[in-house]
Image 1 (cartoon, rainbow, N blue to C red):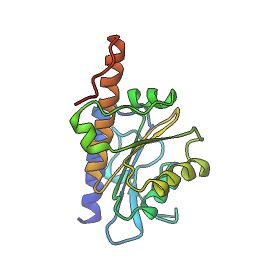
Image 2 (cartoon, rainbow, N blue to C red; image 1 turned 180 degrees about the horizontal axis):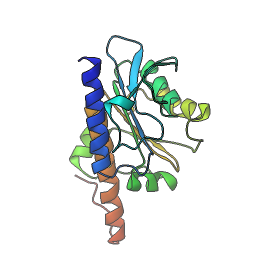
Image 3 (cartoon, rainbow, N blue to C red; image 1 turned 120 degrees about the horizontal axis):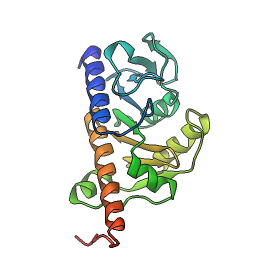
Image 4 (cartoon, rainbow, N blue to C red; image 1 turned 135 degrees about the vertical axis):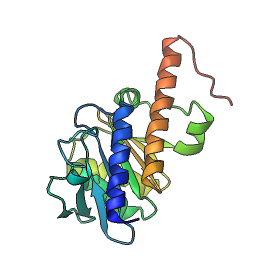
Length: 200
C-alpha cells in the first residue's frame, strides 16, 4: 500500500473512532507501520480524531525522530514506536479513552470476555499503573508488557485509556471496539444487579 493510501486509511479509522465516541476532545492517538521501513505514521497532537486529515498526519521513525509532516506528533509517540520496534508482527496501534474500559482500568479490573467475539479477538488483557501521558515511564510500562507477554493485544492504562494492537490497523481498531463493547456489557450486567454468565 502506498504511503498516501495508508494516510487515508489512518484518517478513516480516526473518523470511525470519533463516530463511536471512543475518545473525547483531542485524546487518543493512532499509528500504522509503513511496510518494509523503520517508519510509521501517527496522528498529530492537539487534533481530534474527527478533525484528523491526510494533511496533519505525521511520519516518524522507530527511534522517535519526525521524518515528515508539518504537524507535531502525538505526545504518545514514544510507546507507539516502542511497540512497533519490539513487535514486528504489529502493524497498527490504536489508543482510545473509551469510557467503560477506562472505568474498569481506574478500579484495576480487566473486563471479562462477555461474548464469543471478545474471547476470539482479545486474548489476555493486561493493566499497567498510571504514568503521565507521553512520559518515558509510560513507554517503559507498556513496552515491558509486550516484552513479557508477546501475544498481548489489549493493554489498559490505569486512569487513562487503552492500547490495542493488531497485524493490521483495521484489526487493531476492531479490537479497540470489541473490548469497549465487552466492558460496557459487563457494566450493564452489574447495573442490573446480576453477575454475567461467563460459562459459554
